[in-house]
Length: 308
Image 1 (tube, rainbow, N blue to C red):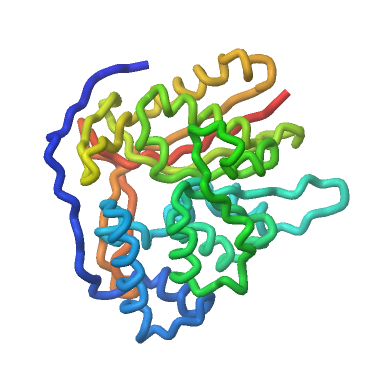
Image 2 (cartoon, rainbow, N blue to C red):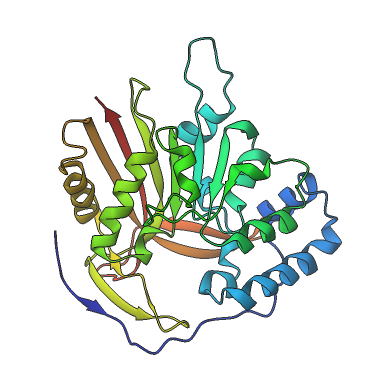
């Protein structure tokens, strides 16, 4: 595992956009059809709830409206390996898929799944902050559509406390999603997060189960020290394809998993995120090959685990 130290300036300015010119069309369509919020009221509705969230959580992704993007739907594995099984009819004797969105924030990715046709009984979400769960129901106006007991809070990936709600789904999850989660932890804590993910995954499917998501990566992997507005440090370790695979292989080698995992396949892509103005869809995100030597890229990943 590479240990190249990458240190960004310790001073940190959190970006905050007062408003947007327009909402992304993908979000506006969802708010119209799923949430039944009139188009003319949508921007004010989103900005108001964003401001409420930012009061408690002054994160860059909230200040810049980054949370409005549907990261899971943009993942290259979404259609085939996430949406398709979550929409499919279960037959007698088949194991029904179960999806968990860890670090769900407003729950935007889960709502996109419902909008795209996934069966709601298969969908679960978790966050460490209960306010995000409540704000998500306000944002998407759907307390009548989703079971609130499928939103597990607190869900602390580093806690073994019996009070933590994640244990409800231990050994039950077949599709586990984490976006913008791993890069918040040090390398040692990332290993513990990976271990916690393995405990959540279902062991008796007879085939591979999936962990997928996205995070900040780097062509020059290593620890980063980027101070945020809470005086803590974010993006504590960024990976490339090799170090990301090495992390999972190391966790697989732990005594708890050495004899229990029959096969592990780790795939990832390092990509550059680009904001593009589109005449029909408004501002959209596209992905291209990263610039040479870039210390900050977007890493999409899949981790397929087959248990013995």
